[in-house]
Length: 510
Image (cartoon, rainbow, N blue to C red; front, top):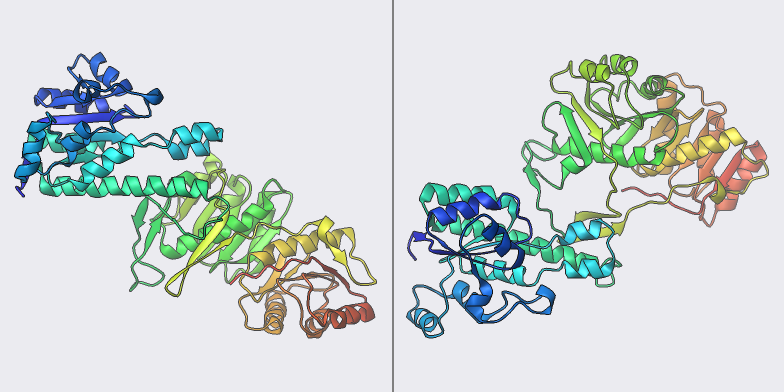
């Protein structure tokens, strides 16, 4: 296998012509024979450059409305032959097959067509057959052939052939082959997931072509990577690179705030994936001030998120706090300048895009996949099980607390009043411990729990939780129910004038 190959011919069949013209002109300048098909052939001719139609090589027309153009032995023989194999070389001559040294392909945009909401017939027509076959053949035979499989690689390929005057090293050919198989495997994954949208076939296919090396993982001795299109979700206005832990917290913040979209100004402060402060008010400034009051100690170094634009007054208050990330749908120009006053503070503008409906995490020697918990407790789903029914104001607070509870690590208890998070017990091994932690936190920040409401992510196996809550001043409770001893908790509430509603939906978050 020689180190470099001098390209003498190229087959070009692409969907996207962006950036193609300079390549075609360079190939012509290097006296490289060009073969092409359909719209690409016309594009090259319009540049005033000679091109040989593939039909002239195969002596066979494009058929079935263009579905079959390049699928022919004279095309694939020209790509797959081994130039150091005497038998292969002899057969090329015998069957008058031209040697093809470069293959440039850009596939039909299957994913974009699916995302556009196009009808199934249009989506199916965007499943590339000839293109994907050319890519696999050319990449397999990287020993002799250079494969350019995406418009994203046009610029790099142009630089390579320009610097080498048509001579392409084995290292470059192998690198382009790896890129090509990245394209083909991702393409097939997208097609499979489209057909398996209902998960009727229990197979997991995940492909992310945009990856980023992080400074480190959860701790400095761990490597870390992020695979996904961060720029599709956010515009980063300022600050240092996001860390592994930043990204986990941003994810938690976004999922929590999604519960409050298109509602009154709501502000949340998160630490280690849990809300330590959250309030909904008439202004974003007051929402921030009251969210911070929930736990000003934990807020240090936290992640801040708003469901509405952050204005100058709010930014001035935020600027007093050391925080890692601030997220909002927009920032006023004054607010942006103020918040940029801290060199490392990360400012993110969240875009309005759909998030995945499934979740995945590594487990043992495999992975766990589940539907996302997209169910939000609502007024019409509440079942009052006590003699005392919650007031209208209490119902609003119960649903507010339930949204926070859903996004807090289990076991969890959440206290709220007046649409403000007063305290929460997070990630405890018993629900009683979570409740005791909530009471202690509320007391430490001087919150009066009299008249507050309580949310629990799962049922109470015994009445001890409602008893402790009652003694702390809680007057209304929301929980899923389902314990064989539910009646014991109901009886205690009835004896002590507490309202309790059950939702029938558990919101564990492990």
